Image (tube, rainbow over all chains, first blue to last red; front, side, top):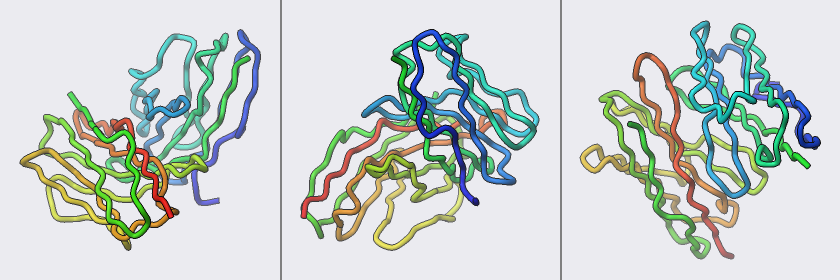
Length: 112
Length: 116
């Protein structure tokens, strides 16, 4: 498809388990972003990839969070030893620099 | 530092009324971009409008319009003749070009309820 896709759409896990979330950006978009959105809240920036530059990790809330991106394609966000406060919708977006971001449908993470 | 403020937490209007959503931003850059996004109850964020700080280039569609005032650092968004389908949370966002990066800062959102 032409849009940003994310998988899984829903993930339920037990506290302490690791989870991996995937994002497939729009082909050709050099910038990729991860955000977290807690229920009824705004978007919290997590990490930003731009081409081959070092990612901007300034929004990652703890060292349990990490992300990788292969070239200008797929990205994975990994949360280790999940906690209940990690429960949220994780949104991925891609764009050309300075242009509109296009968002995926999100992954709803529930940590029991 | 970047900052985006959406002071209106929630607005309710009756269908066919015009409604303006406020956005105030802070930036030290002279070149930056401003955006509005819509998040309907389904949850997926939809791009609406982009505005450059340095020229008149803009994007607009249908019943949507904006009022960009550099002097007051505001980027207000107006929906004309609102419809029930406009009910959503609307986010304003700012992107600077500091150091060649394009990190986006989002406001906290305004929830719009359009009543039939």
